[in-house]
Length: 368
Image (cartoon, rainbow, N blue to C red; front, side, top):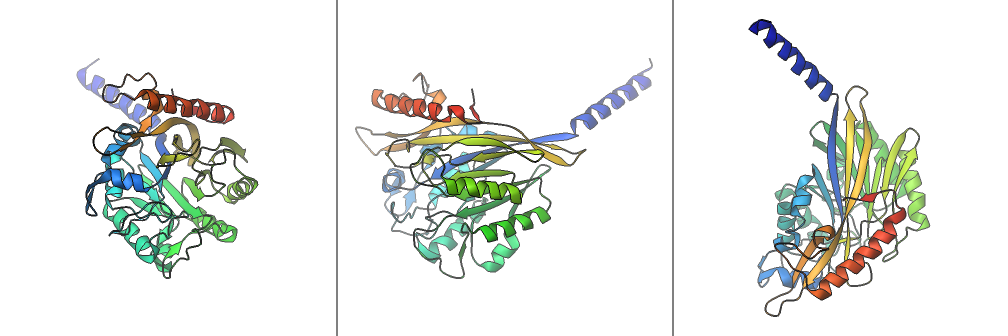
């Protein structure tokens, strides 16, 4: 074979390989639970009172996991009012540096419709959106005004050759009224159906609904959640991911007509200062989608979860340190950068045992 023929054979081979490979594309999505801002967390992050904060240590050990996803999504369950006083429960007001740390940790998108959306009133809604835009987050669930919602909702995110539509709603705002012209998306079935219809008109590859709902501290979803799931799937949602109970609730994969759809009722807490049973951790949910360019369809290819535990290291000198720890990396207590105390190791392993037993019958499995 001459060199010229050999050249064209190689060109043909690589052309065919590229064509076959390019018929499909995958995307890795990552979801975490509620990001809280209790007083202890604010005090721990404070460097200079009321003016300088550092939350980066909180996410040091999960950062590689977050960064590995094509799109990482979380529920920001605080307001960022832009000025002190910064406070925890019951009216969450956190410094802007929390958003900075989340961006540096690898998060790409934050949802803001939850029962604490109005904790800092109108200023909190507006400044939170401003900060998230400043640091390059995709954000949805709260809006400056009706015109903004009309233009930017449903939120459409382009990643590679994927076009994803996101919708976000909360059951309420703890009785704190939304101040016009700002908007907080509430769970209103008529509006939700209308929004999904609008999302379908945009011809996205996948429609993902993020809901703030359910009963706090209950390990099993309630009837209202199940009924709303059925309606959302019928209207056209492809995936539903929930928060608010502060504990992990079941994950189900459902056959709906010709499509497999995923429902995660609650991912628990990602980081908080809560100490009630099962609130000291949660899961990172990883979802893989595949798009077939030949058929134009996008499929749920797989999903698994990573258990995480919230450590509060109580140092003999200095402040407490809050951390999110991927449990498998610390179960043997041989991590080169961090050794857990006997007490913390016991607490983490106890949480892990309960979580694994609880999710044993769910349709998603722990990532090994």
